[in-house]
Length: 143
Image (cartoon, rainbow, N blue to C red; front, side, top):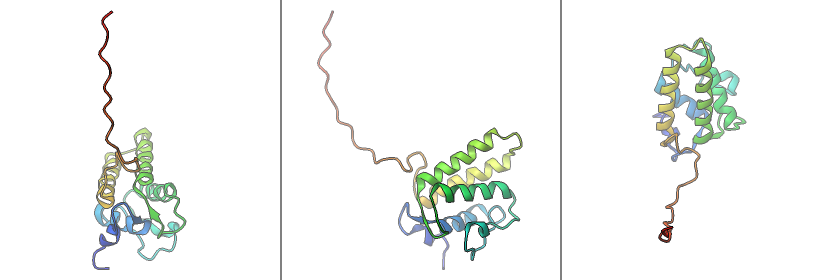
């Protein structure tokens, strides 16, 4: 592969899980997401020397589960992926031992996902908006 980001940009919103994980690792740094490129399943993907190993492991597994992946090359979608990230963020904000570096990592992952999916997380998975019809109401009668 010439550019690891090319694999993620097959078309907007269509990404393979493995490609997503590798693109995230390249964007946020391999020290945060040290991944085995040749992993055959989710349990082999993340190496144990990640700076925030538990957070990284939880995040990768939650994205995998929320997208109902059965293998590392399964397709993932923006909606379930951002939902997984939101759940991890919610847990972090409630944990007494959370440090600012964990929050910063999660924020960086969120921005990276937005770039990878070429989408806005606020509308990911939302139905396409239609132009509302303007309805005229009759004049109000004076009482």
